[in-house]
Image 1: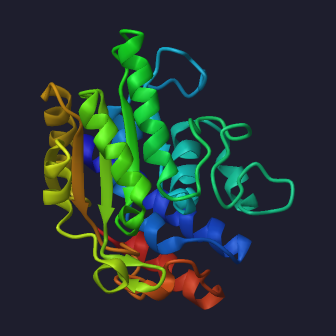
Image 2: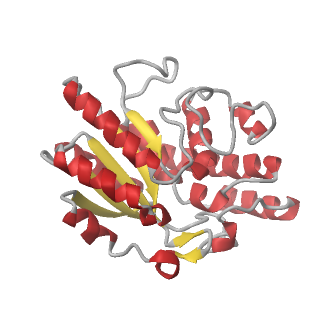
Length: 272
């Protein structure tokens, strides 16, 4: 029953992503759709959060290091009750809170303003270190893109997290294999991702990033691992749930037209 409910939420979030990006005629559908199960399991099962009190001090934090995937974060937050779903239609509109990258000063539930790749994981490390200093039991979660791993700042943050034994930090890599210019291995190959994180002293888990049960098991395993930060390498499909977007780098940052929206919504609705 739990997974049936989470699957239903995933379908709703995918629908909201398509509708909001289409309304804006701008946005990043590919990497938003690939991260739906990750954010759904985090916000609806894993994280200690209170939607009616988003600034509650005693809460877990989430940092969307791949800030261009803001549509999936906004759709997740609205469906979780942080703000009205009706606001999603104002994505990227002049004067809207929901701009192309998340802003913690305007959007309830956003714990860090992100967009410059590499900086999100760095701030997540700082948050986790602060929790350690304060003897807080709260955890910090951070989602990175695989293309983002080409940023040197990511590895400085990884080294710092390992040095301070930040076992209250969970990083998740959305490993869909594509970035705006094509295959990540052609642009600037960051693989093997798992071995690199191991070399930096991290506990490394791998998972199908669209498998809800497997994701929840990984979150539990990460919480039980002590003495080092954990990273989950989540293998995903860019554009997941919309056949003509799946595994297509061209949908990294393009909005669908009216006919494509209708087809996408039909596929999402009919999906098992």
